Amino acid sequence: MTPVTKYEMQILQADMRMLLAVDDKAIELVTAKVAGGEAGKCYAVLHTDSLATLCGWREVMQEGGRPHRLVNNLYGYRQEVNNPDW
Picture 1 (cartoon, rainbow, N blue to C red):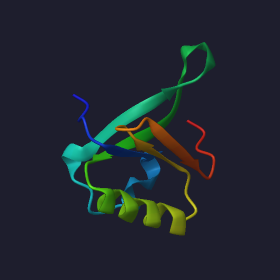
Picture 2 (cartoon, rainbow, N blue to C red):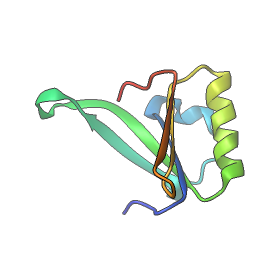
Picture 3 (cartoon, rainbow, N blue to C red):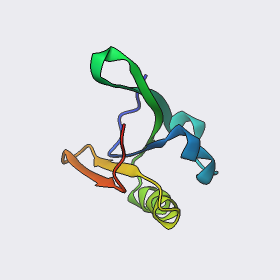
Picture 4 (tube, rainbow, N blue to C red):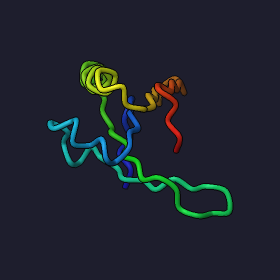
């Protein structure tokens, strides 16, 4: 079941190792769909209600120059950083 939280960050599953302190219950693993219904890249959705936690995750991903997507579920806001392709 998908946790209902204020914020989420979407990153490639391969980048999960960059965020060592993520609670397993906050992680949702997803496979993107591409044209024709085929499976695309695997990515992880990290859920939190803490803006401080989200900012910490964001700093790590930006320092590494890694693609990610920030989502504010409360306001329907979405920001893509470094062109995530999933």
